Length: 279
Image (cartoon, rainbow, N blue to C red; front, side, top):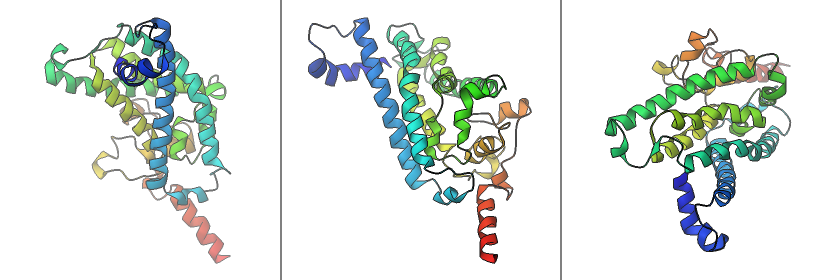
């Protein structure tokens, strides 16, 4: 995160926002800057990527499904934009620790113990590590003593749109995002790669809520796509994974997507439309 902070300081914050007497490396200034940048970045990624997905990928025919709520899109956006500032508070604490040098993030490929191969391996291990952690955190949030407190709001959207991707209770959102921030404190990771993965994570989170159920044939049982995650919203106790189906298979919670078996949301819509035409 210090890369983003340095750019913001150089081009905007130092020349136009803060007094010249306030050093860039002063702790309070860094915390305030990180709060601003984190909230601005989260809003831009969520609204920008969400809008692209909603207008160009999301199948608006899904809005005819009986489980699609009245004014759902605006409710999703309102809930997310209310939660994101609260999620940013503990997130900024972790970003601040990164900026102060407590993580294992590094600047140059030469700093990696394995060089370029290490860069590739760290990308793979990031995906595997965060997928494993999110699976178990997600299952924990479905425990009967926890679910109603924190995770239930996200399941209001049984037929989600891309804007449901970040529509979490703040505690839920922070807990499911925690593995992304914990990883660089445990394992070496290039700073630019970390930013790229952070953007990828947001794109992926939106994509599994975008209603595009197409998955390449050979990857259906490997990749946790939108069809898999939609079943999680509909049936509650399956497909907890983020990117892959591995932990769902190991944990006995894998469900083959109903949309790929002719029993999904689109099939119900067509059935109901046919019923209305007949009658």
